[in-house]
Length: 238
Image (tube, rainbow, N blue to C red):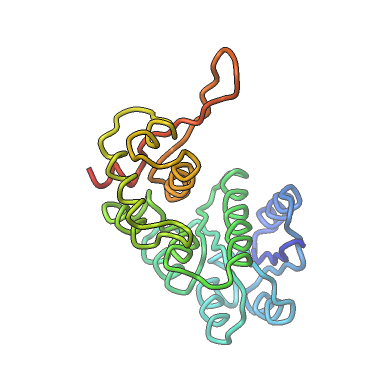
């Protein structure tokens, strides 16, 4: 099902650009547009789109005041702010009022597309999670290993999913910590004294957590071999 989008932009040329961009991105449907804040707020209240592309500087009611009003009335709509303003105060206010992304003019189609695709992935994840763990929340907030820093490895240990054992994870991590360069499931299995099937489950979890990164190694014959190497979380804890 397509995600409903409303555009609020007072510049006709930029508005048309938004329209063209949205039409090029699969999974989104433009359901309304307005060129001033008051009309825009009434449109949001009526249509209740999932996402609004909102310009900060508009006549009548600027984007920040409109966003604040949307939050005050409890309308369940997400907002991507678009503006020529580069000052930190405007950006901070937008974040405080709950904007999920902030695009600064002039921008490229790729940056616009990235904002919408990130939102699409966010919606997909949140719709597939019923009972959220701390790890689920961190992922939804983009608070994964590349952003969190030195505590990531501890987070990975504390948020181990069902079906994995903490003692086994600690053993696998201890072995990996001593590794340099790439290694295979067989390498860890031999040193840990546990089956390759079991090791693969732990390595997959560590890849999902960005503790490891994996590649496929293609030899002259036979099936490709999965190899792994330490990633962000290990580097942050070195």
